[in-house]
Length: 531
Ligand code: G16
Image (tube, protein in one colour):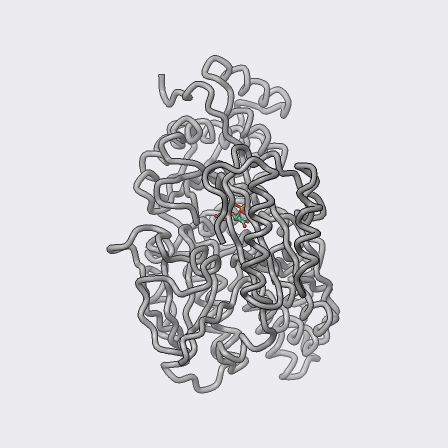
């Protein structure tokens, strides 16, 4: 029997698909190949399957399905995925038949599935297991790609090329063309200003940045670190490490003040940073990117005189200062808060003409409604607009083209940020100074079953276990400008704790107290959290 399921193993389709130790995933991959085939027949479109565990350690792996427009899998199908993953061997066929019946799938319909993988040592064999599940005639194996590249190519395929060409080369050409056009609006940049240090997290992003470089015609000059030639994937490097530890990755050599960024293991997240001459570390996370990008777009809209509704979507992890800045200083922008997980932010962003969404961890992009894209196009064809308006309209159009609207994309976000800084003639220090982050801390607590924690209000309040929210509330009250929430992770077997307060000491002390409350009230395992 091919790809048997270990008896009793139960896994859940979480924040970004299935994620666990690679050795437990063979049957999951095979079954996701089967499910992707069904989804393809049902939608009569190409479906993507990406084999990656993104920010998780090298020993882990995972898989997620990509829907026709390059977006995350529809929630109902997530529940099918969980059912299929957990069906014991004898129940596999009946479970498949159940999906076929419920969705009235025509099994004679052709299927097409795009499969991609990251650089993990387990990814080759696991992506083969996916392909075994996809009938031999209906799969296209892209091999090594970043997660957002696969999302992009699925969308290109299903729009018959309208979104772009469904190849990695086509992706490089579209994005770099827009980047070159945008940077033409920047005056006299020195080589220093065109220079950027990139931490590739020893993953797929590093390989793809290398492939792309020649397309950028030295308008961006990259020094690549953690390119996978020696270090371990995500180990003491990458976007998640930099964001959570609030320090530079190992394996990167930079001078004070120099602009740097880190990708995560599958290149769907990016964070920026620099270190002062006195050694102080400055992080520019998803919130800072959302602020820079939304301000830039807002200014362009004003210049062309287009009345489009633009909004920023964040999660509970957004730094309080960023929300405050967007709501109270920039004013004109509505800010929404959703649960963690790109699919939730993406959905909320679709409600606006222009939806800028970013998780603080660096996962994000911008969505333009069809109406917005059409209005920009009409402007360009309008002979009555003046030169200044024309320039702004062109900038808007190239901004649309540089963005991967299917999902957060480290490469696309990097090019957009670099272009905006160049056009505005802004240094990373000036960008950082737009607002000052509240000191914050993120911790993980091990519990025996993280599902005992249930949350509400976009994960900002815990409704179970009993007493936990009360304990958090009374602890938070003891500190100034403080805020805290806890939630079960959807990608790791831990409970996440987030705090912010007026000083780093207070954010740390609060995080410790809240961790203890989680440990005591939610069934902590192992040693009690230490300060
Ligand atoms: C995934 C999701 C992100 C989420 C992150 C952490 O990122 O795509 O939306 O913020 O996991 O999720 P959690 O806190 O539930 O573990 P990635 O980059 O690992 O795919």
